[in-house]
Length: 315
Image (cartoon, rainbow, N blue to C red; front, side, top):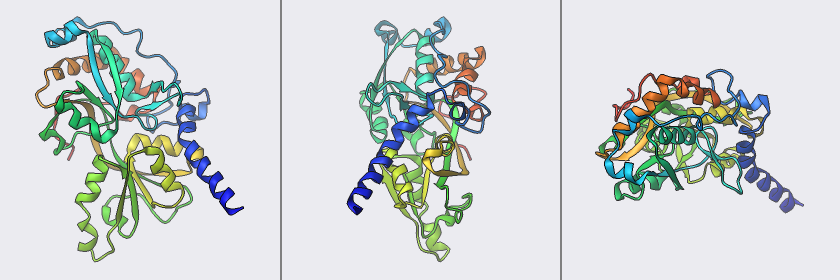
C-alpha cells in the first residue's frame, strides 16, 4: 500500500512539468494572464513572428559568409515557461520568449534558424568551439561570463526565490544570510549556482550553519525536489518563478526579486554576428514587435529600452 502511494505521488510530480508547459499555451484565461507582473498576457498561442519581413539595414551587418549560407545555428536550452519550453512533449514543438525573439531576429536578418536543443551548461563552451553560432537559455549577463562571451541583450530578468505555498516561515530573501541552515535548489551551471557557491561564507561569518546547495540539470527535477521537501527554497529566474507560482498545480509561492540581470543572445567573444543581432533587436523595439512579444508572455516589466552589446553586469 505504501509503495503504491509513493509511486503514484512520484508519477504525479513527474507529470506536472509538461502539464504546466502545455497549460501555458492553452486557452485558459487564468493561465494566459498570469505569466508575470507585467500586466495581462496576450494569448500564448498568438503568432507574433511570421508577419515580420527582412530588414535590409540589419542584414547588411551580417558577415558575407553568413548571408550566403542563409542559416544561423542556435544551441538552445529548454526548461519551463515562459523562457523556452516544449508545447508538445512528444513533438517537441518549441515555444517561449527565447524562441520568439530568436525567430523574430532571424526573420529580420533573412536567415533560417537551425535550432539544436542542448543542456544549459554545455552551450556557452560550445560557442567557443564553433558548434553553435548563437546560444539561448535565458543567459544572464555577468562579469564572469563577459570574459569569454559576448552578449546582445533583449530582456531584463534576473534572480529570484520561491518556496512551497504552505511554507510561511521563509519571507522575501534580500540577503543570502536568510538562507543559512536551509537547502537551496537551483539549476546546474547557472548564475544562481555560481552566486550561491561564491557566497557560502556569509553564514559562517554570521556564526550560523551554512546553507546547502543542490544543483539540478533538469528544471522538472528541481520543482519536484521543492514539492517533496528535499529542498527548502528554489532559486531561479524571476519570470520563470512568477509564472510557476501562478500555476495552481505547482503549489509554489514566489518570494520576490533578488538581483536583476540583463539577458541576451550569447556569442563567442568577438563574434561578427553581434552587431547584426543588436540592430535586429532594436528594430523590433522600434516597430512595436518587441512589446507584442513581451505582452504575449506577460513579462512587460522585463522590457529594455535599447539592445546593447556586452554591457556591464547590473550593480
